[in-house]
Image (cartoon, rainbow, N blue to C red; front, side, top):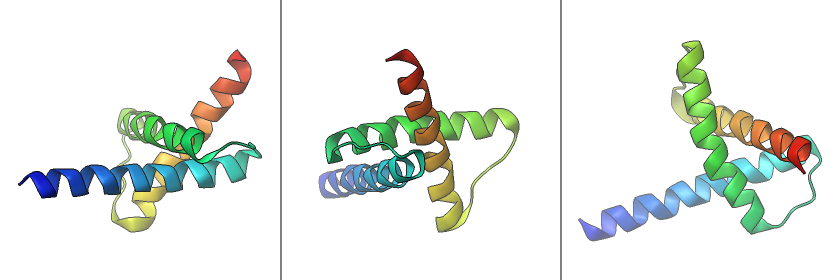
Amino acid sequence: MFILVVMTLFLSLLWGMLAGFIASKIMGEKSGMLKNMIFGVIGSIVGYNLFKLIGFTATGIIGSMIVPVVGACICIWIGRKLF
């Protein structure tokens, strides 16, 4: 059970890091791996809530990657406006 939880957390962070990396390339952001991971994880939360609010759901591998990338792009855009 513990191994399953750790593996799920690791894969979620890896997926978030990939989403943050893709979003940083789309937005032209020059950032490190830690910042990409933070943008990806926060972006996935933002993306899933935003898409749920609109009424869309993501299915499959492609849809599950598009939602966090869109959320991470939104987080990068907000970060640029604030700082």
